[in-house]
Length: 86
Image (cartoon, rainbow, N blue to C red; front, side, top):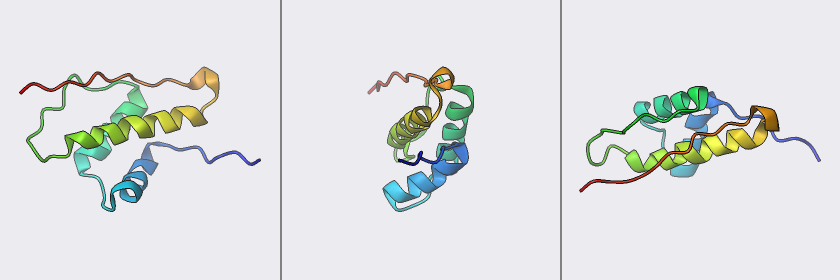
């Protein structure tokens, strides 16, 4: 069995396009890069309604996919806490 290709932050826009049929908003791509490179989530996503905040879940799933491809000693995945105020 051959190994899967190793994913990286630059692959997020293609992943997003494949899942949703359109490119991510620039802020979504920046969020993905930030989470992947630092292993940390921002304290809040303070964006207006319809800005695509729900797609932050795609960032979390993609980050998990990257962690699976890494050697066990290199795996790290930020754990976001989700809640809304309304």
